[in-house]
Image (cartoon, rainbow, N blue to C red; front, side, top):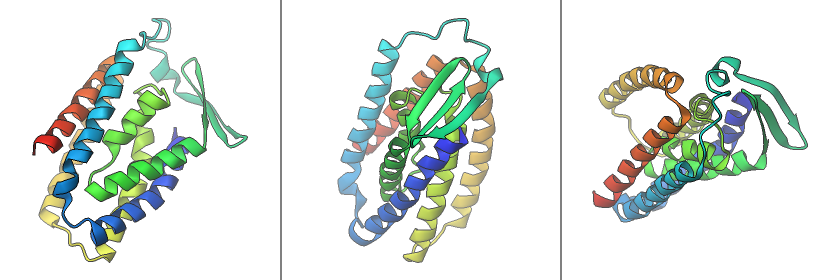
Length: 209
């Protein structure tokens, strides 16, 4: 859903700039804030788990048609984005992704992470979007905010480790291809379970590190 990704990205532009500036000028030692970051991540994992427990499975009539039908009936009216995916209609006030994009990019820029581990749960748990449309939507916002964050860090005097950068880019390409295959072939509930487990492990790592 590219308009939703664009709204998230627009908010993320400001958040990424503000977060990277704050991190460089005032938060030189991030060890103090790792428990806070880990706790926030665990809360996100708990929310995903709660949603999985209380959400009923989609009717079988929808299975196999959602991915094939794709996104349709995109519209923007009264400052709200609307679209259809499969047989379900969605309407999202534009202010929500703008604010969420800012907050998520701000946190991600401070801690030097991609932001996807917060952005994806927001789309899945708060906006109730199916997991099959989330990766491409989130990627738009992540790329926009990430480029701004990197540019600002470089402006503020940071240096790139090109050997690490190349290795990460190669891993990203392989992961993106594998992730797209998994996303297309697993049910929504299994994808959310995987997401919750990954977010849980990230939170535990930051708290116990």
